[in-house]
Length: 195
Length: 120
Image (cartoon, each protein chain N blue to C red):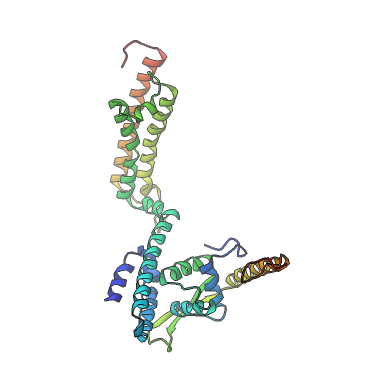
């Protein structure tokens, strides 16, 4: 039962790691298991040892997953997986949506942080500019599976990537034009009640 | 990934694995037992730490996989053996030299190894 449980635990390792070391780790665990079986009189010590091995392996699993993210594996996956790239690209519109919701509904304390004075100030413009620019970044990320050459050196076409990249660019252009026009009328020309 | 500088300090796990492999190639369980013996039971390494370290050592070129064969002392299963590389030996030598320098420094400062008390 202990061996079956450990095998289940090993299945939680990242796939590439599991393929490379899974069998060896299992063999080493079985060697430890057989060693413990030869020393049956160690009751409590044996239990502590198994708990320690399970915990140590679980920590190793967390470490390997963390390293995958920090070593850029996630970015490589995004570059080759069109659905994941589309999802990540779409995520880049969230900051604008959030900012819009905060300002539109005057959600505190965030609203006061974005607009400390009564009127729109340079601080708010900067935040707006940054979150707006994130939208074309999302579009670029959505296009990554098309821009990135595969292992065979060829580019592949994914309609979902093009569609989402186009939609995000259109959203960016429309929002920039609408907000730019409003800022020009209200803050440059200072037309009263221009909102 | 090739190691940038083999003279950089090693983690305790990497140091003990290199020390264990300096006596000859070994498989996972064999390395664990050798580490335990080398440290008089003070260092115990589980499979998670061992293979995590081996992966990074393989990537850094400190160790290499040798052939897959049976260890008759354990069972009849074929196992991957690991052996230290030239870079690995260099890294181990640099680490031992660092330890040596620390011991020399401690002796110069008349620090007692067991009690860490100033004997002067």
